[in-house]
Image 1 (cartoon, rainbow, N blue to C red):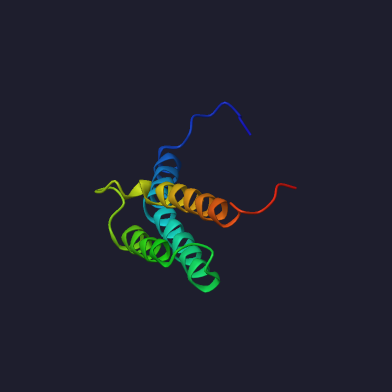
Image 2: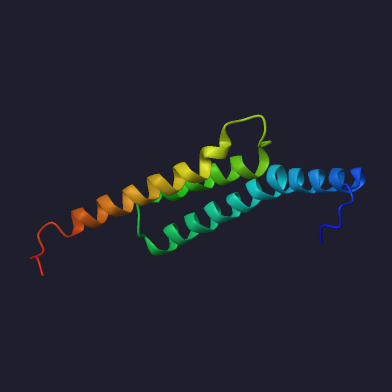
Length: 102
């Protein structure tokens, strides 16, 4: 692969533009679809309270339509996953409080 020739400037610019498009356009949209589908599963199964699913829809809307560069919405997916995990752990612990230890 490396034949000693320097990298062509046009190839570098193409790679830079492609990487920027993926990072700034595609990834927030993929995150939004993940959060929206997870929220739909939450509503259909009732695993968590409904308010968390509606918060998820709000986060998904923000991730999908708000420009990623201008806002701190990049933390939307990690915060949604954190809140979901804590909520599931808390509701599971509450539902098993009176159960005998196996």
